[in-house]
Amino acid sequence: MLKAPLHVVLFEPEIPPNTGNIARLCACTGCQLHLVHPLGFDLSDKQVRRAGLDYWPHLNVKEHDNWDAVVKYFADNLEDEPRYFGLTTKTKASLWDAAYLPNDILVMGPETRGLPAEILAQINPITIPMRDDAPIRSLNLSSPCSVVVYEALRQINR
Image (cartoon, rainbow, N blue to C red):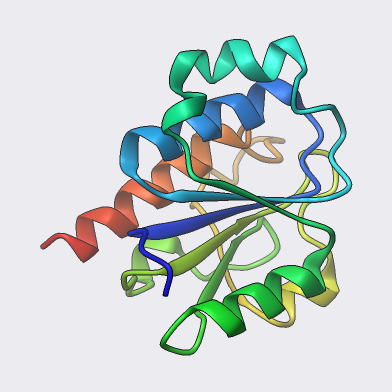
């Protein structure tokens, strides 16, 4: 069975430095990183490697061909029913109200599109509350990923 405190899934990531920063986060926290194709770049891209520093050898990363492959992978490899939380601006459900458990799966969508409605319908959508008195759309992908990973780890390690 899988042994990671959490699983971070990047669904069709587009921007190399964001993936590199999230890879670095996963290496530092022991979370497993899952990359869902198609990627908007090649993993050998200099920007991905630079953002991830020399942490890549310390990273547990798995690549998946598509979303269905992700769902099958977790159904086959987790003892308990997989629990997915997807970060999105399309919900009012706050990440602070979720109760996280070991092996939870945190899903991030592509930077320019976010998670598609068909994936959001299959998972628990959560958001990071932001001010609503300005035309602010969202945070950079690596920032909310860090926030939710550390909140989930805080709850798991109480």
